[in-house]
Length: 544
Image 1 (spheres, rainbow, N blue to C red):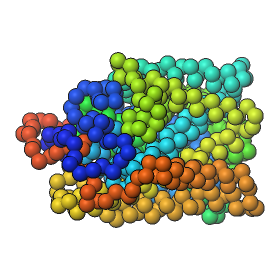
Image 2 (tube, rainbow, N blue to C red):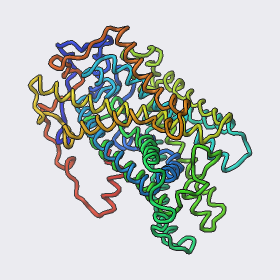
Image 3 (cartoon, rainbow, N blue to C red):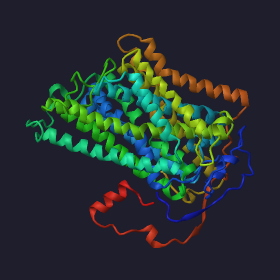
Image 4 (tube, one colour):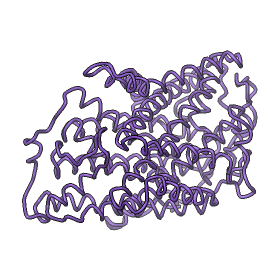
């Protein structure tokens, strides 16, 4: 499934129509090896940047609280099962993303490809949907940051902490992309250290090395491994989808990658496994150090909440443990919010570059920084100020419900786009052997992604019907789906777009051509394995 040699790149315009109201040719030339793309972005990101930006954006500080919310919703075993199932879902999503984005490393990635192989109107609605996912993530992280600071100190009100951090994140997000990338490598590395430390602390707590009491799997039998039945599973599925969402964001950085044909497949593989191990590990360890019915875990009614690690350390006799955990959570926000701003702004640039958003957002500085898109994206962080008027736990719940629907929609259409791309590839006489990266278990994996995520979209608002109909929960759960449908129909009607004929679909513009292969130095392809710690280092920090 990897790439064995360096390809040449086709940048000519296809002879067949692209079926879009905004020509794709401008953006698709980004697959060239030039240092600057047609939209003004700079190709400065390396493999380590791609991997760590994605990891830093997905693994936010909120996962420390979210692990507690998951086990309180469905119990430790139920939460772990849900996260593993969504992990399988995301694995096949990443296989589809890997095949499409390695073949077409274009700005907008799977969003633009949906317009090329399904319907141009879908690129608009899917792009807005994905932008919406990431700006809700920005607000979600700011909300969690304010809640964490409130737990730590009451020296300043929530809105003051928010404004201080908002200004700080705004400044860091305006740095040159290579400086920003290096900063993300450092911050995400610190986050990895904290996660490894969290795993170690959980083991010490569970075995009695801290606290003096062996726990083992006691909490899986008392109070139990499962709780809340099917409703609990539903809540944990929602949380799992939100915390896994964004794994696919690595494909969006292709437009700023120095060497997308090599770096994307590596980054996709490494990013997925890092995130899977991290999320499932956090849920597993949370379930063996605290009972799911502890009152200090996060719920929708929480005015404040603690992570399972803080709860467990306090139960073990360390009353000030909360301060240590809060330090970890606050520093983790430094990378997660920056990554979310990065992704949201690049989605906006892609939409604007292809005529699907105001051209104002496509403008960049001479350093390749899309200032307008960055500032506009970060402004949505002010939604977090809702926690002043209501419970932060309730704001957290609403933002989670909004995000999960957007994630399911994006993943479902990644699968559909992949299926249609492959069909167009076959109809136009191409062989799967020509693909630089082939998705594992195609087409079964792609169909699994489509069916599972469409099902999850439909049931995402089930909670509104449990225990009596709740209008607020219903609106929040299904509003994003309604908006997505209205955007699609509205753009289709306004622009007169049609479903793309696969026999005429554009397979040329922006595509990497692997027919001409250059002989590479064997040392660049195979490296001696070395000791185990060298293998671990290469997994965390890929070469280049």
